[in-house]
Length: 418
Image (cartoon, rainbow, N blue to C red):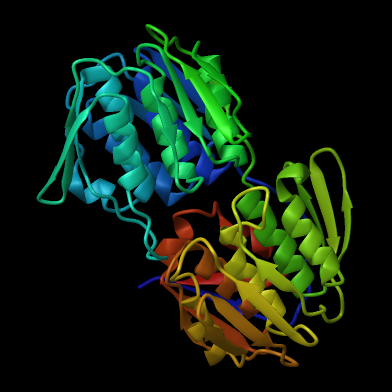
């Protein structure tokens, strides 16, 4: 079984470039099914989720080719041969469920397994199904599959009880080819939603209001081929900012969008980190020891739930007591058990983690339970005395491009054990 080893005690120094956004790319690729022609996506990250999506599109009879060396994904959906998605692929990755809407729009039917992915808590597809039904689809769930069919989708007004990124993106793709206008109220405002809207508009769709709480999608007869560049990955950039701050490092993160990182940057500054921003870069100089802070995860533009786990590692050695409250996913504190093995003083009270900062962490054998937990454990290993061995590497590889290489170029010891 593959493991990552990390030898701690050295500050990160140097420059690292941000890859394309995982969360945006896996939202854009299902939308490519809507266009009967060749789509080219650029700046696509070389990560496990992209290879899974390539396999999934191919299994539908679509011509999909990812070129890792250039970060270019070509998708020709002129022919979609089946509306049935393979169980073994959809179970790997939650975002793959979002092929259901485009299949429904193109073929009038779909059969997709209930999704899998990281085990971080309840992420129901109820909002997705509610959107299908509101747009005129007949939906049933049988034997672990969602089956839907329609004689033609029609625009509707849909209110989301919570601003779900996945549901907002999925409903927007369904509405592209629907007759009339669809309005999504309480829509998610994340940059990845805006990127999807820009991609749809580049194909000739009509989406307004992305990045606000109300999105309007005007249905069109057909979409046209285009070439589109995926936005930078704010979660990857954020992980390197946290790692630099946690190790008293000095790191220049390039190719990012600082505006997408505002809530994290403010918290790092509150913890004593020096930060300078440019148009597409952020420079970080970490404190000798961070100050304790309180963090509460919220939908964008609030503090992102994906950065909760990495920032927990940072705060494990902060001076004082920190409180982290998780409002998005109820099981996103599983990494704290692993951090305690490394000497962290953390206790969970309901949906909050109380962190009493210790002088230092110690290397240990730990396991990543999900993608961002993996990043948190690498950061903890960089902070710790001695060597840390991390299992569950498959979770990390799902969402971080060449994470070992990128950390190594910053002057620290990170490697892989087979």
